[in-house]
Length: 200
Image (cartoon, helix red, strand yellow):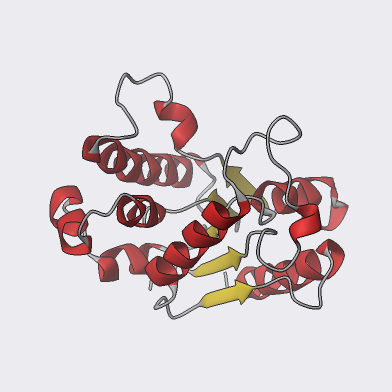
């Protein structure tokens, strides 16, 4: 595991799981002021790259852009001031999108020149915020109310693939929707982040 005053924390999960909302909640909470920095999804850096999302090259680029953003932010932060880095998806998320297209898992690691264990070691913890489509369908919104085109069944399928990608991480936390409203789900996530902070 990487021991750093700037631990990388992955927020993963299918569409509509609450990744963006959690970051927004933390940003409004005075108790978290100055204690974290958040990175956006790498896909925003590639939308106008000219690389089609239908190509394998797109997922390789996603891995490299994600790693580059993480390393760049770590270098930019003050070295002796603790700060959690929250990653809106991590460098292994592209594996789920790769598998979704029916491509072989072993080819992903060969093509991206990575290993599952090596990518696991980059991150202190993984918070899997399960899509609202699975267990809270009344809160799953699509275009135009939200910028997500996926049908609920597509969101659930992707969520399961992300669980397969990240589930072996030693600090993997699965935050489902059963018996929870958003306030409870957010509180559970914040408690995990608090533990991560205490260990920096």
